[in-house]
Image (cartoon, rainbow, N blue to C red; front, side):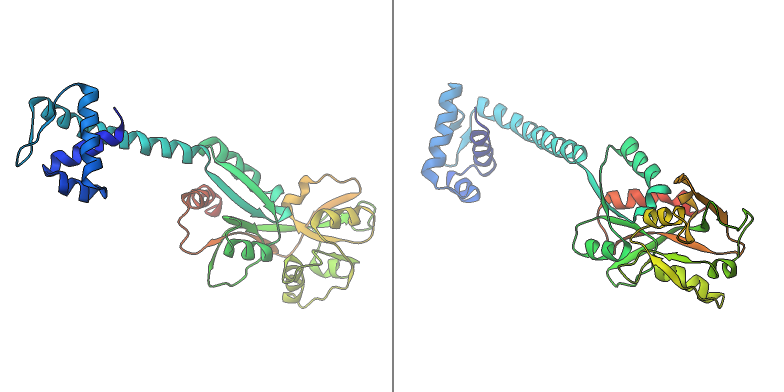
Length: 291
């Protein structure tokens, strides 16, 4: 028996009319009659007596009673199959600023893998590029450090991460907490050079808020390069505390004296986002947000 035979038979039984059944099925009546005859021939039984109106035989009634639960079960199987397929290929595309790899992002990725069997795709990009990628649907969420107003994007602050001074190992400065005023008097390495606005502008604003000005001696493309330049004795830099994990020979990380010298860790996503993985991501991050 073919499923189409059973679907045709089910509709004939519902309407007790070949013409109405054919109309509902969007086929001509003669082909419908032939399909029912093929079903009867295959089963070697008479299912319908061709009277006016049509009537079901005892065997026809039995088959009709079995078709409804059969199709219901097939529908359940189809839905479950789709759910399994969707779950197995569930994917979250994350845009991230490079400095995020030294904070909470790796832990989040592990939890997404462990708890939800989610395939996570990572795309490195600064916050400004993340906003563009979100609006074009190329990523699902972005992790960065810059607030950017856009009517299509929501931004959630996960936490404020303290900043520390990265100093050359041979610098005359000791390991005691250093003030922004002292840092402003040192050759300063600013990053990233592009794009703007970016973390570089956030760094400059921190000094401006304390009525200080720095004269960058060098601009770097990213934090890792900035730290390498510090190690080479080119100057000093202001980096997130999580950068202490970069154990670079010739670099010392020293706390900053002033309070609230921080950099936000920001989750960006589309407004009215319907992807359940984005909501799951936010839920996993909330404990950190409440600390």
